[in-house]
View (spheres, rainbow, N blue to C red):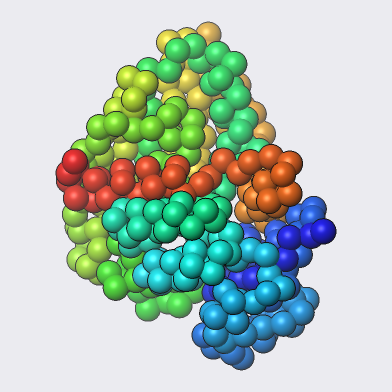
Length: 323
């Protein structure tokens, strides 16, 4: 029997990245969607062939014919909606970042744990083939023993007047900023790749003065394994760059977090380029892993517990490295 899904918040992320994945994954079915604007919910349901739509989240959370819920709203609403799902006993797939703060994230994780209800978080790079290729290269010893990792991301300043650029990402009442929204993907994948981060410090400032949230962040950290890491992110830069470099005793591997660029493997003085694209619906592999887990055929690698570690690290960086 297929897992029957309901979506709360059928906005931009659900159009291509995630929404169709619930219908295309094997053993999965998208039954209902919800958005506060009923006309937009109806339009989404019509365009994506979803049987029904709602303008009230309770119609999803309390529905007897839905097995699981995907929360795809802004971070400021995650805590309330997730806690309601836990109380209702609904297995939940929650968009990243988990919530506005690590404290809120911990409340969510605790609620699901105490209710005995599964919780997964949309750090879908843990299931994407090109990121698994990076993991396999390192696990197979392609660069020897890992020593350090460096993450760099530069983006032009966001146009706060353009709705196409999702300007809510820089409004403090909705999120802690673009670093909070985007860099968490990198930090979470590094947790998956190299294990938990133990010590971290950071500096977060606003240099351009276009909005209130930080637009420039630097950080350094140490993994529990002893590997060292550092990162720099500017969201008011005159160039665009997104690259992570993992350096080992015998070489290095480079890859992008946000773009399906080829993986670069440097060893023995030679550079090897490995093609690595992404599927059309990038969250579908993770959705499949959740459906498989619900069916007793596997496990999803991105849980509330793993995502909480990322929330803690992100908070510490934004707060200057508090413990």
